[in-house]
Image (tube, rainbow, N blue to C red):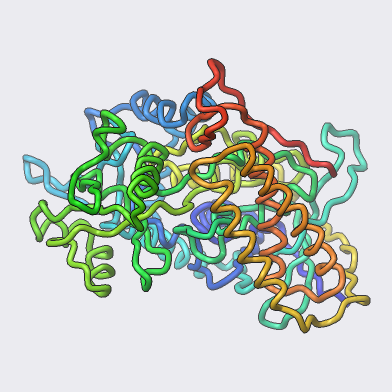
Length: 534
């Protein structure tokens, strides 16, 4: 018998988007937050740089909009960009009210003001930050507020398996409505279900599909895959942002080196110490991420080098330790003193710019189902995300979704009995090595064939390999009990297919999608939209 849980609102994901939405909704609803690991384990916690918003009197919303449009390589939805930039400051002020402590400095009159840094692609200093651990400050502050709220329940160590949908009984533009999800309790290793009036996917991106990534292990594209299987459209999955500067060290794991380093004057150098970015773009180190990542990739391949180097040692030691304490301590623990030495860096998969298609309130193609944060496609990022617009999108669209959801919630929640989960014909697996092998194969060929530089032949090879893996995994999934690795692999393979199919449809090079077979850019930019076969 499948245990059924009930709530008004189910939020799948516990990063900035999910926690912000929960706090906005809990005044009027009973909320459940599903967290795949510990509450703080997600991409938000590891975000270093900050959040973009206009706080400087010399800056403007129009300038923020223009910078975003330029970085997006002509593919941003202008209305969405304007909506996001206009709502940035109120959302940041709400964060500050929750207790988030952004760094401050004294102005010329001795008055305290927020310290604003600058990152690649920005024409002004407009990045609010908490040293170089902004995400940690936001995540821990919001998590603390959530834990204290009487109407929010937190389910930690739970995987969402699939959405539960039913056909609409009333005449509606959408034939389906979401009524909850099947979830796997990793604490008891039992499948449960959860009914909700509204279900919100806030599961983050899918960069774990690549061999080298800055993301934590939980970034396995779960929400995108579940929404696709349920029947939602996805868009622009070919645009996966590779962060130019991840620490290259055998003991570093996935340690990101914030773009704020370059914003404060760090220089990219070849192994011989020579600077190379001015040869690629007039903005040099402050060019958008796609340009910087391709430049590093090009130089590594041209020279046969394992890495390039990021050098901020020309700045005063005190300045470096004050502004980048996390990076300083982490690199020092590995024997690198960034006040005296350059830092070895390589690009790594970092951010999913496409995702599940939504409107300005986060609504998907399925009634009662919403998607917010990195897993959604709002039109904000276009073909390349502007630095520090990611956490901003989480906040703006969480607030917008909360307004729409609050207005449409039923005050009297009539719980529906959900279908039972059937595992009568499955057994425990004694061949987990199959999952591990498929896992490594997938991430390796995605890196080799669908990485920073692509060709049609590489994409065709990748699609063939994905289709073989999908058939193997489908058979495995039908015959064996679920596990964390199996669920993540199933989702990653699905997301890999979507990335490849989108990439194959784009017969041009634009932003993060660069193909040697179609190096030119079309005069008119169009989104790549895939419609589910469901």
